[in-house]
Image 1 (spheres, rainbow, N blue to C red):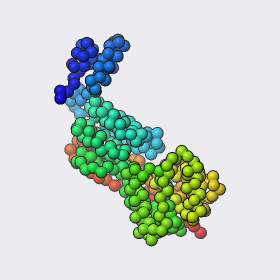
Image 2: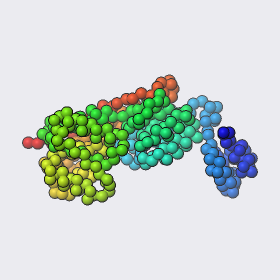
Image 3: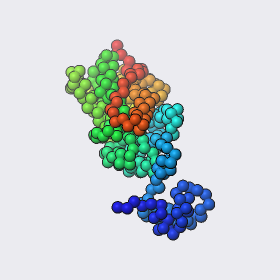
Image 4: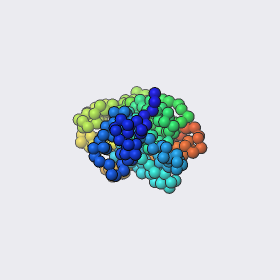
Amino acid sequence: MKKTTIKDIAKEAGVSVGLASMVFNGKPGVSQKNIEKVMAVMKKMNYTPNKAAAVLRSGVKKTIGVITPDLANHYFSDISRHIENIAYENGYTVLFGSSDERRDKISSLIDTFNADGIKGILLTPCEDCEGDIMKAIRYGMKVVLMNRCLKMENENVGTVMLDNEKAIRTAIDHLIENGYSRIEMITNNEKLSTLNSRMDFYKKIMEEKGLGKYIRINLLKDIEKEEEVDEIVRLAYKRGTEAFLIPRGYLALYVCKSIKKLGLRIPEDIAIIGCDGGQSYRIMTPTVSEIRQSPRETAEESFTMLMNMMKGDAPGERLLLEPSLVIGDSTKKII
């Protein structure tokens, strides 16, 4: 199938190639009527202007794309800030986009990055977006997945993420050392690869520790319904649960709120340990213990891997990062 060109667009719109080019590049001096005419034809012919040719004339485009689920999320905003700083120090600029956990947005952003001549992407994938990653590879892009993995192997795809088994083991060991054994998990999205693996490791490690009879994963359907969180906490306390392990940062804050609302104390009645809560965990009363993945290290390792793949044509690797334990008052030792 013949590829649509700027000449085709200009011919269909009844304008000159030069005028069509001015519209594509946002140049001034074009009437609104002609802009609308060219844009309508571009949409009709499903044409995305590709700036790669201009890039080839001036050398490799020193811009990368970054796609995270939500730039407003403190953890992903921290990673993005570090990526931008590291990229700047290395002479690169960064284009950012949020996926909102939607495949169609990831696909659209990949198309946009390709049109701008970008050949490297740092991406936190959503569920079932393997096909979109393969599209990026067909465009000639190198891709590094951050924080989550996908069930795919390709030399043009690398992965940088937390060692989730070690993270969950560290959390459970800490709780056990402080006298807690009836440990339950609360989560809200079993489909995300990170949360799925953390649930699996929770069950595996609890069995290893001889605590299999206490295994329980409480799955929240709607985090916005406070009464659902309240009910999970109330029933857990009633059956003698001593501690909650929360594999997702902001969820711990909702659970803390419910514990207090029910007139219970942290950690005297129920202890709690979360993951990647950031500054919000430090200003809580009591402060919340957490397993932490360094946003700076994630950014550095992801950017370095992408550069090695883009510049040195190195294959993508799978890198697991070490978790750290930050102890707050929410897991104080039982006396």
